Length: 153
Length: 147
Image 1 (cartoon, rainbow over the protein chains, first blue to last red):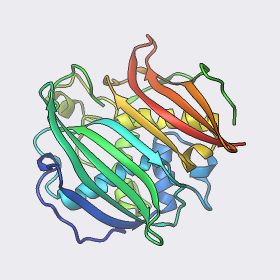
Image 2: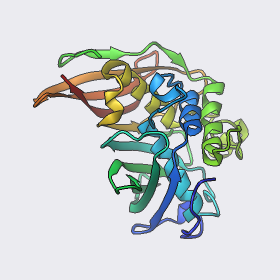
Image 3: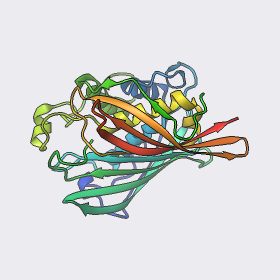
């Protein structure tokens, strides 16, 4: 693990409330992580798979959310499976392999719609060296999904 | 890189959402987290364990939404090149579950093209559909292409 260990909101991810702050957590983007992730989702582009250089796929920030969860919510998911509902990312600058990164998030909303609890988290990925904003991300999950009707992923 | 006009539609080849494709993404999560060069696995999920998925009210395993998001991103990179991951936007919403062996086609349609200096800005509607044209994932993207 290449993360610092100084953050803990405590509890389950299903307990998160608006205003809760997740992180920041620092890590160094490794070529292994980029290649492994891209292999899993069949992104075989040279920019991800070659052995020197390489760039982070902006979709990888979604796993940074799990990184934040591990630090802020050490008890895990909670009683029901968590279902990802929406990915919304703006890519401000390329993120090269080897960059020291800082990721942080804040719970923006929690609401119930059609009987399902939605939790929205806003995240930012920044370069540690100069605090440049690299990717901003809004993630929406359902934390009380109980059936097959309608949305699910 | 291509320069699609407003109204152009770009479509990927069909892919089946096999059990293996779902599991690859499940295994990638702890493997990325450990970042030690070895493969890692995790507790059963709704994406790789039928029993657990059924316990959560599902008829069987369903794909993680980020797989379709990545397939859409791959389609946009085929169209706009690596520039797309240097600066851009992608939003995807998972409006229907993707079940085992369901066919998935990634699609994009150009809705606007704007010139900003030496950069062309493409606005797109993006989605994934199955082989009956049922939409599974919907969203939008913005791509910036230098002249």
